[in-house]
Length: 238
Image (cartoon, rainbow, N blue to C red):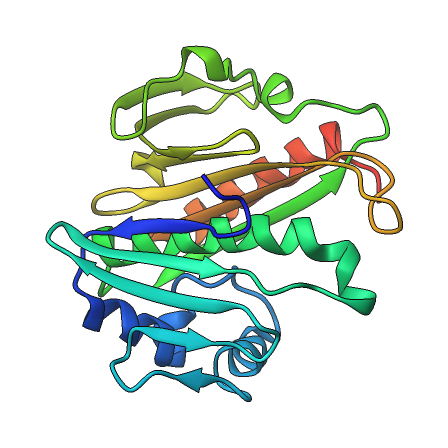
């Protein structure tokens, strides 16, 4: 896979994918995670100084990144062709590309699994001066995980037992559907390792994004508390 061009095959037609890119309320169901200022970020990225193709198959963002949509018999291939980060943005190049990989998987999940259900998210991140490996800290042996699309069951070091299907996996990211993260169907858990980057992050880091659907406040709070505790224990350094 070309790491500068993250892509994903979405089981939906190009018109549906285009709406996820162009309608802010729909974009908020897959871009990033819930946070203060998300609406402004979506406006700046997807609407300020962008160029749409007349056929609604190409969207060029202001920083030079380009979405392309290729209709196929089995869905729509969505590719993000990265522009070249310069100046103060150059040190963020790897993180931005990894972020787009995550967001494209969240786009696919939103359209294929919960096209009409709003998500609630949990996001935590941190770094480790001890150079903690995320998979080891969680107790996940990635070598024994099934292939994407296959069912899994894993008990984490947090004490939680997760069940669902492997959504996707790369050298630095793991996506799992989680039955307990949704009232109906399943939610999505994305785990990402981050390398140390000069001038940005002195130590290796980790990110956790949980996308949940239809859960009550107490269940969502419990998931958030679990991941907060994990991060404070294993990746506590700023």
